[in-house]
Image (cartoon, rainbow, N blue to C red; front, side, top):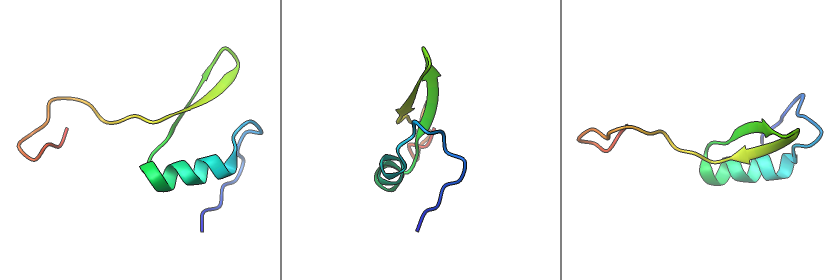
Amino acid sequence: MIEFKNLPEKVNEEFLKEHLILCGKICFTEFNSHIYALDGNVGGEPNCYYEP
């Protein structure tokens, strides 16, 4: 279903697939030589349709 190429060794492919299916987005960042997967959302003042 989903195939990834050139993922860093520290990234768990099964976690990535599950998180993308459940949340639809994921953001990776590096801090102190560690890779973290974060879930976030768009920000800002919503319009009349509650879109940012």
